[in-house]
Image (tube, rainbow, N blue to C red; front, top):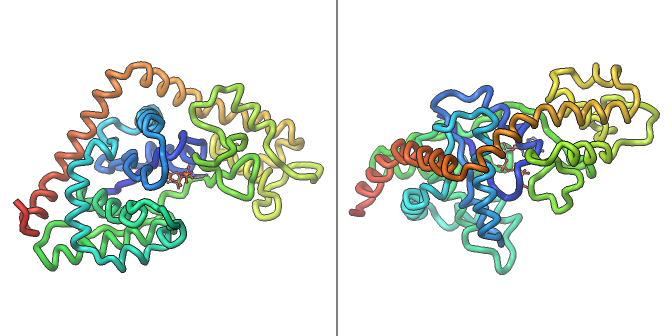
Length: 318
Ligand code: AQP
């Protein structure tokens, strides 16, 4: 079973969709689970109402993109179970192991929240509670899955067999979308300047304006060359991800930047239109969204609670 998460650190952007969500919807197996990692969005200063509304928006978008509602849940709906298991795993983890995490070393500064140190243990709880054996992660999160693996092994050896040993796997290779205004960096939900970020719920006119303003280069015509011409290559890749046309071929079809940008805008707008419409109608029906969210939480809890009770019993609690 694969477990994948998305953090509500901002609004869902085109890269999240083309690089992850569309793949999850198309290629995920029925037993796989997807969760909105809202507890992980609290390790740095955050705004509580904004976090809550982004978590709802994400659930709506995941379902609108075609992921079955029974495969989706919000992490904080399992806060009690995950909190208890995090404690058990913290009692299985040494301080040195947590402090060695590269992400912690990179981000920790004076005044950092303690959760910045301990969130990999919460991530281990996410994985181990649900019995995931495959966790698709990029290079930056691989070390955290290795920690989950080490903690699962140690717990099983010390106290008794409870946990499936997870392993990091490569995510399905979706498009890697770059920021339209700064193509040297990837498109991200939390980019401070949103001019180069297309959000899944942006209105079509706004999407078109952002794409028209995308940075390209001074060459006379489009060509696909990601290393030396990242801006225009990004547009060609986005077009490819939305229409299936290979970027090299698109570069021969659209011989001016203007024509290419209009084609990219049309393709992105049409790709996102049904998702936007379904998301907005779900968001306009909070009772239905709440029902879906509760049902997802019940199913996820049912899949994990026996591991939590066994772990508590074996470690000597209750
Ligand atoms: N630009 C991107 N192109 C392709 N895939 C992307 N993903 C994110 N940005 C791009 C994929 O989206 C999934 C969920 O991402 P996440 O929430 O776990 O965190 P992230 O990768 O850090 O996403 P963001 O949007 O860049 O968020 P912030 O701004 O908080 O860092 C992952 O599968 C990711 O690969």
